[in-house]
Amino acid sequence: DADVTQTPRNRITKTGKRIMLECSQTKGHDRMYWYRQDPGLGLRLIYYSFDVKDINKGEISDGYSVSRQAQAKFSLSLESAIPNQTALYFCATSDQGARGYTFGSGTRLTVV
Amino acid sequence: AQSVTQLDSQVPVFEEAPVELRCNYSSSVSVYLFWYVQYPNQGLQLLLKYLSGSTLVKGINGFEAEFNKSQTSFHLRKPSVHISDTAEYFCAVSGSTSGTYKYIFGTGTRLKVLA
Image 1 (tube, chains in turn purple, blue):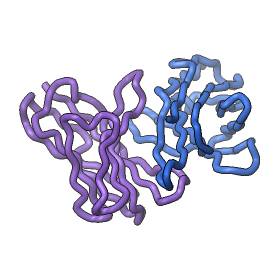
Image 2: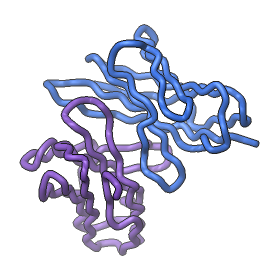
Image 3: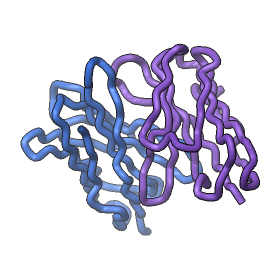
């Protein structure tokens, strides 16, 4: 099994629908992150969590919300999806130091 | 505040030729530097990292990078590339502010290895 698992891998949804992307990890890391990848823009941080009771907004949190259900689970929700939220979404984890991230395989979301 | 600039959005290179992917950063605190690789339809994998010590860092798949503090650069190099190195490469910087580490990613460089 992968260290960081994201579900679903691909999703097409309609404008206005609520959608949840899920992430679970077996690394035992405290820190979890949600990023969005768009061509030419690299990865932009949506939300991050340093432990179960700590949730922080990233640079592009508008239109998104998160829930840290347990140390190993961090979900991202789009309350009312819009077409410009079409992107590749990545979950990542890290320990408390600076040794680097472990990424999931990504969720490709299309909003039509 | 920290920032990362990857100067080249695309780099074509012939197989077995050397390649350098450029990365410059700015930061007001001490930094840690990373290169990640993303193969098509996959997530990002850590290629190599600089935390401290020797400024020349060796990573997986024959890649290496050199930390140059005076030039605020962390360029990625490989002496001889293979078709399988075709991927997108991301430079990232992390620095501690009040004990927390936040990572900033560059916009990526797409390496295309030509036969």
